[in-house]
Image (cartoon, rainbow, N blue to C red; front, side, top):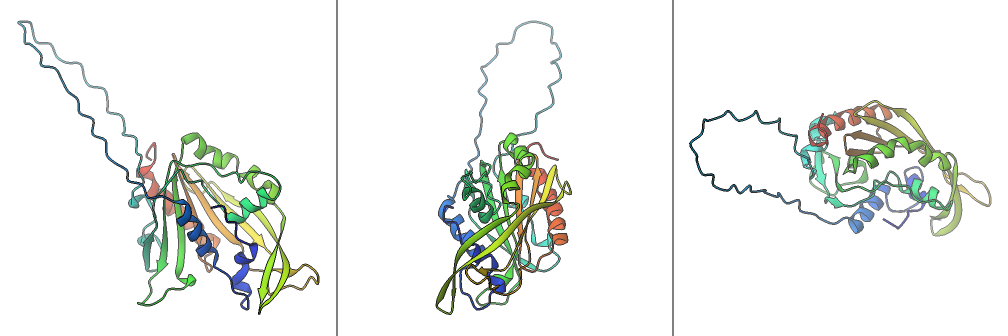
Length: 282
């Protein structure tokens, strides 16, 4: 998770003559390096009672038992994730490994923006996580990045950390309201230094679960540092949704053709799926 990708990789869809790894591929590589498979075991508690000796005494009614407390949920099962039926088009599920102690990473470049200013990345730690990608139904054969419909990371946090993620969101992105990122671009074998401007903002709040927010990165196309020449048009904003239900937090990222309205709808569906697995449940 420490190999911060160049900002150029975020805007490759608008620079057809430039070759670089796709952003989702970078996230997948980073996740594979850092995630570890975990097995959540069920612990069985056996109550051993001592034998009681009956005595000659009047039988008394036992006091009513107190209501059983709801069991604390720990593992994250796949039914707490979005399902293909939640999407408006046919989808396949590609599950990744579960994670232990992963940070709730919102966006690599947001983290790079903060660390470039001498700040911490600011990610909240999680206890457990599970991630998946829902893919467009595809005939047999190689898949392309355009098959990605939505990527979801679902985290279980200490309740205070889950709440803090939302109360501290404005402070998290404030240093990156406008950030000039500089990097290298290879165009037909010619290396040039280019820059792009990223502007992070929260555009919607409170539309799902206990807390929810849409985070948008409006970015410019790469421009040559020396000449100012712009390479193509500004790409579509990068969007992600964050939704909390109890101690669970889900981060959703759409494919390239997704809209903010669609992301809000999927966040509402994700919150409904999270309800039964959250502490406390809905």
